[in-house]
Image 1 (cartoon, rainbow, N blue to C red):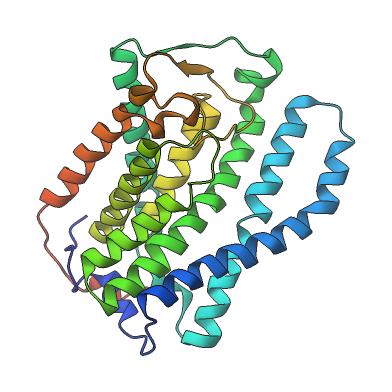
Image 2 (cartoon, rainbow, N blue to C red):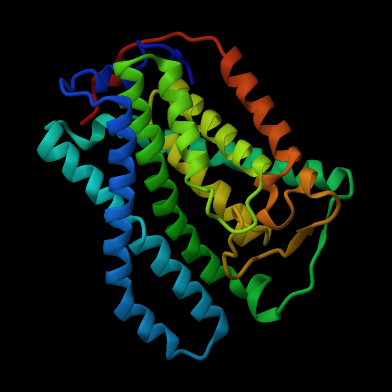
Length: 310
């Protein structure tokens, strides 16, 4: 976590090797194209699998399998679209997004560690002020009996989290930051990340603001690490903890079985209400503290990331 938030950051240096950096508007349109084309392919690929799943009778596994299909087939083609664009148009390696092999495992698990601290801080803050309680639910969909399906869903969130990081903190932030400046890249990618959630159920103005703040935190985290690995791990564990460990809404979406089953009580502007904690001021506080810490970290920049990365 010792890389600078500046044009000398490895993520921007790697992107500057690309001689055809698109205009800001074109870059945003390309991200939308990657997302739409990938998800359309995913919809058609999932149809025969969903037909088979509907024939099942076990409610826990039907819910798990449906979500797994959505997470895998709704996101894997998007990653493939970005890969093909970079491979055949930009003619640069996919690892230039920040997927160097050097320190990949410790970086990824450090992201998971920070994600656990962050989201548990949100839950802890809400619990401290009695804005969190237990919710009664179906025994088949909660508790230790669903450890296996929830673990499988974690694998799905690994793909989903990586997809959104590749699109926003990987390709878009780095392209815009390399062509214009660092903060333009951060703010444009974070704003698009927020706008992509505008059609989610139970969305509110505060929830969109919070998603943008999440995007800023993820951007700064990736830049401080000089890698995209940690941001992918952080994003994935954040979503999984929220939905399949604590049993809360993930950006307005139900996520199937859960180990615990909590619910927010109190004013929606604090708790997030039906959108989940991401829509509440408790999350805003935690994220702003996290952003302040990342901005205040001192940098001791070295170029070791460019070596021993094979």
